Length: 182
Image (cartoon, rainbow, N blue to C red; front, side, top):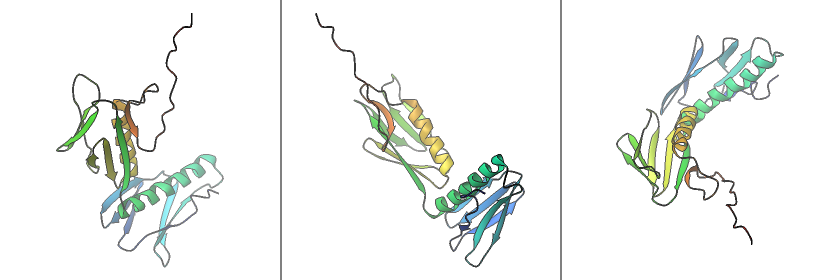
């Protein structure tokens, strides 16, 4: 049995869950999120503290067991994100590297001959503090995908560490070329 999958998800007050064919819709005080569920997975609502339980048809199947835990965690992330939004911070490291918000776009000066404009997807909020871009969203998947796309514009390089990196990311540095001794 999946240890993560069999744990119930306790719903806080003010949350409502609707289970439809192939998806679970979680509604909270800060909006709603939809989570796709695999066909062999069943979600049940019940209990005195309102809770969700996720089950599968064949708990011994390795594939179903893996998707069981994944489905449960995706629903739990939706509930958590609607309580308090998830947050990711990106740091712009390098001489002349700047980031600014221009309406619904992020304007980045990251060493190219032109300014890079990145449109923010719906559901993601951004704020800038000097060289740090902070992204917030109640959808954890969308937040991670957006942060990864921004980082991909100029990933950090290993010699000087210049580029766009996550705030908590450690860049493995390499030694540069050494001069030949005579």
